[in-house]
Length: 293
Image (cartoon, rainbow, N blue to C red; front, side):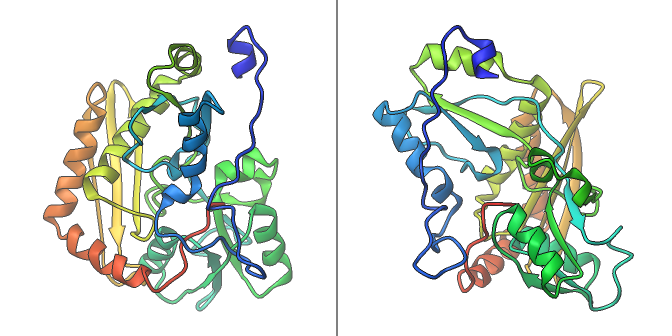
């Protein structure tokens, strides 16, 4: 897409991040406290001039960017929903079924909907997780529909309604980050931007920022645009599914940040700060979620 949009060839610079690093013998990334572990080294390459444009999974990008950097583009969003692999639906799973995920957000919503489920830890990339579903004692696993589609495996999962399993903020979106003063890279990123996807992502990121959510807090947000109106649904809860808050609100598509902040305020008024503080304490005793949602 970048080469089609510009006149020059594009060089791919591979950067390993803290989220990629694994201690010797470990099956999961080194435990670092926040989602910045997936972008920190890439942003350092931007600031050092070793790269001109970064491509992130938008759900991995923290609400606060380093000084001198900016999100300059958002291509058209892929399917934002989660997908259930191994079963036709959540209702079709038998009582006590074992469902694999490394996501606190997914765990919280699975148990909120089906407290009887045995939600078990599952890590690794998409292929690894699908192999474990086939070879190990899992009745189903939950993965991002966008990840399955991008790897050519859309048939492996059945999409879950966003009202049942609200996606991670930014799920399905790519975020293009540049140096704020690099007009050439910024213009290139802007030329790839899909307005609807940008508007929805902006609302979701505004909610996360207002809630001060981290990778250890089960927060979900999903915005949809239609008829000039923007609707934002959100979820906050405990990883064990015992306490949760859902809300949604419609607002002006021209003011996505305002809508995100408004929904966050409604969640806070309903007790989300206390719920997320408790979730954070619980999450400190667990390994961080993997990046291969």
